[in-house]
View 1: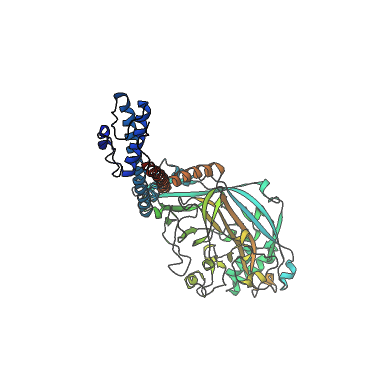
View 2: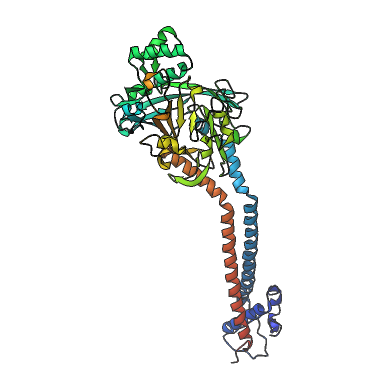
Amino acid sequence: RRTGQCPRAGLQWLRVGLAGVGVSARRAACQSINHLLTATAGQSAPRSSAVPVSDHRLPLILSIVFTMGTRLGVTYTFGILCIFLLIASIALLVTNVFLTVVQNYVKKEVQLRNDTVTFETWKNPPPPIYMQFYFFNVTNPTEVLNGGKPYLEEKGPYTYREYKPKENVTFLDGDKMVSALTSKTYVFVPELSKGNPTTDLIRTVNIPVVTIMNMAKYSSSYILLAEALFMLKGAGLFTTRTVHELLWGYKDPVLSSIHFFKREVDDYFGLYYKMNGTDDGEYVFLTGQENYKNFTRIVEWRGNNSLDWWTTDACNMINGTDGTSFHPLVTKNDTLLFFTSDLCRSLYATFEQELGVKGIPVFRFVLPNEVFANATVNPENAGFCVPVGNCLGSGVLNVSACRQGAPIILSSPHFYQADQKFIDAIEGMHPDKANHETFLDINPLTGLLVRAAKRVQINVYIEKIQGFMQTGDVQTLVFPVMYLNESVLIDNTSAAKLNSMLLRSEMVTLIPFMIMGLGILFGLIFIILVCTKRNMAIEASEAERAPLLNPS
């Protein structure tokens, strides 16, 4: 009893079976076996006598012995598995094995290749794109000509469904690049509009007249000819046209007269004239085959790899994508570059916040103030001041160089992020971040554009020009004409597919945590078994003090 061995000569063979068991466990086993022997023999034996083991009791005794040994083995097995699984899970988390697997899969899949989902989505985007036009109606033209502040009334939106399929798609240089045309078609959507574009009249700046004035103001002879033409046609600083005419074009009487002598001058004018059912030139994109970060990056536009409208090489660069797609694995530290022909320049956006759109996690990127800041604030923008050194201020961009000399100034709607002087000069400007900011909501894993809005205001630079009575005593103004809101939101079908793919990816990346959870579970089982064994040992210790066989 002191050594934990069975004292009976007839049970000495059990030492082999209990050799791997602790002292207390062996004593408990002996105690159980002796009780069993007593019960099965149906009689009591003297403490000093030996109890023989009959054949019919042997299996039961062996079962007890091996149950004790098995329980101990199971206990330590759970303990070893717990340690192994915890170490394995920590190693997987530190090395990011499964995250790397997912990222490599995404890099491989997000490339422009024939007959792939990525290629078809890029070629013909399924989410609907809407273009909303808002016009500013001048309510006090006489006061403006007399030097007063303009009072503008916003009208709209006039909403159009926009279709932008890629056409004439051709793979180049061993499928490393692809060329394509982006044709744009607009279809009016009355249920999403306020007003009728064919009947609603807008009084606004007469852009053809102002353009001719700016071209002629440096020559007294041209001023005389232009003034005579304006008088003959009854043209003034302001004109009244329907929304449809201002957008898609109308035959202008002044331009028609000039067209008679100079055939290259079109006799029609419209803000989106010849831009419905047409494209803005051929693009050459990288497919992302060699580097995932070059996915759909523009390498050429209209046969050139740079622009020639601005005064510095940096400002003339064509950077990034076309703004409809971006590389996968986007991080918060990324600066997203994209080129837009509407603004005649490249732009960039930086991370602002994390959001969710239809259950899809997205990073919101916005245009920082520096994009349209004055050269004194952002020296890199000096090249956008045309002519050289002629900077109008922060928040506005003079694009006359790429608009056939028309004094067009671009900005955010209601001069959002622009100098306060532009807002104060016009009555009716109410800049608002929620309604007037350009933003991109991008799923960081796939780089897919989930939601976006491009918001641009078209203004005209007007001033009093000597020799033109049409300008009266007008102030020098950046005069708002209209602004657009081009927006896209992922459709429900595409959102469901993307959510399903993101869920599968997340499950793969969670495997190390699942392994860690299993290790913790095994650890709990190990603790429970150890505690149970300890309780048994305590009971066995108490039983040691009692005789092994009860006297008869």
